[in-house]
Length: 184
Image (cartoon, rainbow, N blue to C red; front, side):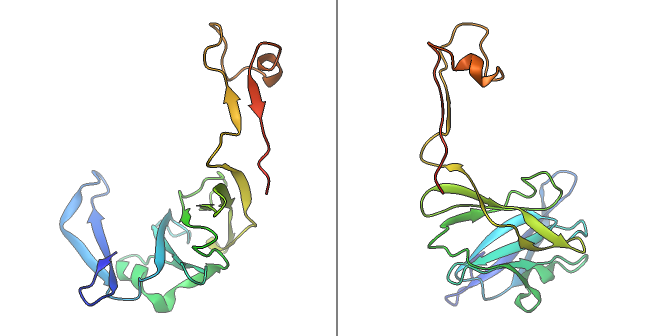
């Protein structure tokens, strides 16, 4: 996104070569000239099952998350507000100030959503599909707290100790292991 020069924002696509990742010259396309204010963009990868990268956008005020499906040979579809699909509601910027997608984080073949909420907790939502397309998300799950560590291992142990050992081996007298549940 960038300023459109008229007080709004426009969506720009910078196209790269699949083999090298280098930008193609010229490879810049204006996909949409307006309507991107107050939206947080996310790149989930292929969320529609067609092998093309799609786009998700969160309306920071309403908390609705929209899916913009890519169309082969027509990348401007990524910027077409009239064809977007709402796939989640209630994820406002006030309650979830940091939001994104790293693709499929649950290893089920479906893109997922993550956020740091207003209490600094990392939350994830697993994507749900119908006909191969992400259509919604499961309830969020708290994965941890960004302010504190939930697992601790003392790093100056005697030689030969590793984090792969059984927790009861590490927690015997003289060892430091703290595991803490993060409240909802």
